[in-house]
Length: 107
Image (cartoon, rainbow, N blue to C red; front, side, top):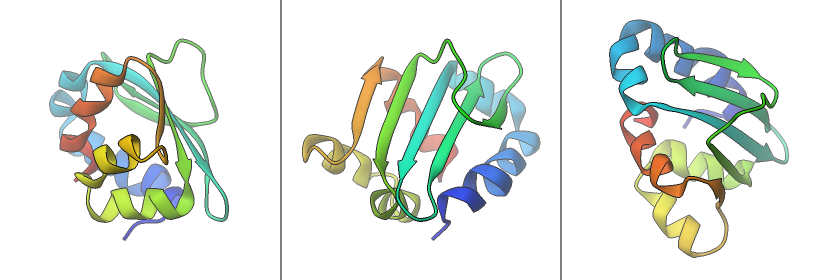
């Protein structure tokens, strides 16, 4: 299980650097808002120049908000995101269909 700070600070940038074409194929800009201990806010650009930056950038096409505990669940099992979404624990604003493409980069 990767805590949010470790995932967005180290693991996701490494995944993006290892295969930038796979990351840019997702084709969206996301903001992740992880609430609680170990949380934070990150902008994940998965378009032309894939990158991860701390903080909330303007122009995000999809924002995902959840607790740190629910983030841990998703980091262990990305397929759990749909269950959390329909259970009201994962809030998605913007383009929810774009969020469905994240599974490939979260694994």
